[in-house]
Image 1 (cartoon, rainbow, N blue to C red):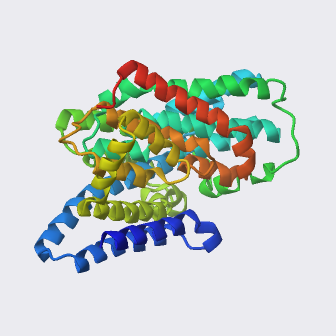
Image 2: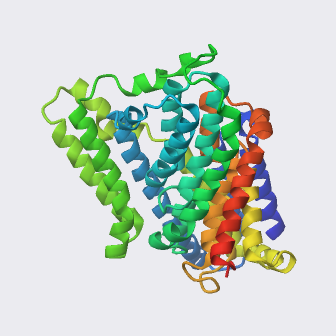
Length: 437
């Protein structure tokens, strides 16, 4: 049975990795892989059906809490964007000095990603950069920095990266502790690449154009905003939406309810606010920015991808395959920090969601209680290691698609910069907090 499960999981992973050559959406491959793993387990085991059902429902409840959290957070962010809330960020950037702009963009992305999430922040910042940096080569460096900064910013926030959110919801980390321990390492992971990129962009003019693909600039954005939103409503939705996201960790700390409950409450409040401010408007004016319409634009395939992957990984955990892998790594590698660093580098090739899900199954909360250094190290490495390749993170894939970044260009020009930043942040964490135990 174990061999069959591993085979199905590997085949599913290959199908996910080669999504574009196969022309099969990775969400479909993930769903088939997840359900097949549980099917093999059920058919090949001699356990009573009630035990199967109990195991599946236990893991499904944990998975559902992650998925509903993501759906709610994505809806809030889309609602802010539909009201042009992110223009507030664009309006504040006025410098024409490329080096200054590099630092500004890096830090805005870093903190915005912690408040929103790395994927959304990347999409927003790439759209902004198209207006600010016309020269193609310079913009590629800026966009690459956005990927690094978004991943670094998402790592130290419980709501900034899906893997950190998974660890938070799973009880491996707490919001205050993850911020306290990972802020400085994540900041180092950002600052080192900025310093290394500075010589390459110092002499590149901001305003000149290479006649590249500026025609891509705002077709999708215009489609999302069929009419002008007043500045007052734009500002109100931006600040209420941002506050709704930031209050989720506070809600969990005060009530001890799961983060899913906090984000659902805040989504409901924001929904009521939008209904009130658009009350009395014509249906054709109100509908494009209504929550009902926004929900239709949510990236549901990505949510189903998480569902399939998490189902598959949970099955491998129940069977004991991941526990055996943890034992093997402990015997051969030994040091938990080094294991986490290896997992982070693997996340540049393999999606970090299943890697973190596997780590959560490999190391129990009994052996490594909440806020043990290993969990913060896993959060940092899985969140930032993907920056080493353009395909290694959701932020990188989004940037690659929006700016048509060549894989080999990124590998030659940016990979070593991202790697040095990643390793510098990891070393900083080890120097500050020591062992992964």
